[in-house]
Image (cartoon, rainbow, N blue to C red):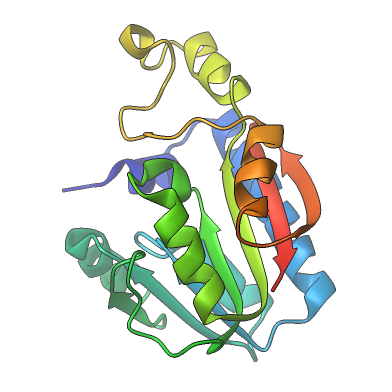
Length: 194
């Protein structure tokens, strides 16, 4: 079964693909600035972002973790060169400070306990967290504009948490101080120093 994440990345809509590339380029520029030695992506899905990072940072140790076994199976077929492991964002089976940079891109909005996950991401990060979520209400409004999720007023059915840029920054501050708060419409991106 194809996940909504895979549908998003494989969608042929040129505007959607342009927005995704722009978003990924913003994430990459944030990573380039900190010269990562290792990158862990928590909530990697099939590994679409991790695959882009593998091309951009070929000498960097990379690993993706997700709790969706079907997404991991699909990811291992799509990107056999990636290390994709099953795991739980609430309880990572990794040592403290074991990854230079920990990424959670479009993950925290899906979780019923985002604070627990954020604390766990912080625990395994050695230098930086790179976090992104949809910037509300703009994300929902863009869904409405393209006729998506009309009965839910544009809210994706898997999104449990809806943050504006400011609200997400305030949430992140509960655990770590944001170093850079930016975005690529319709997402908010935060880089935080551990």
